Image 1 (cartoon, rainbow, N blue to C red):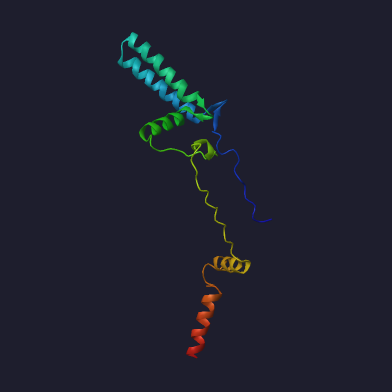
Image 2 (image 1 turned 135 degrees about the vertical axis):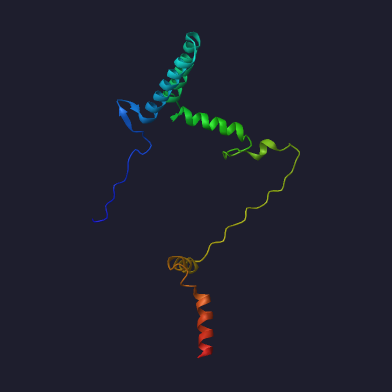
Length: 154
């Protein structure tokens, strides 16, 4: 068994730095602390207290809140994308009975469902051979044409 490969597991789990704290959460908290420090240096005390409360709330929400298992910043990006492009819809296919939408007196002709035609096994094997050879093998019909033209030239 020479060709063994290690398949990574849990690639969606974030790396932990210290306890349950991830790298993303640590960076967000450092940036929040930086903003609080700038607020302390640039504002008077009452404005500083108000800004600190707002910054701490934003840091806690961005770092620790998850919605449907996704971090809050991904949820926020999805909301912004939906607001920017509201015409993009996702179609969820569901079965709807046609009888619910018809009038009682309305007669609609039912069109027959066309039957699928299947290729014979010989044709399928020929197509798979063409694909397997990367197009080098052209198929029996083209091979017969090529053979007949080379036989005439000789």
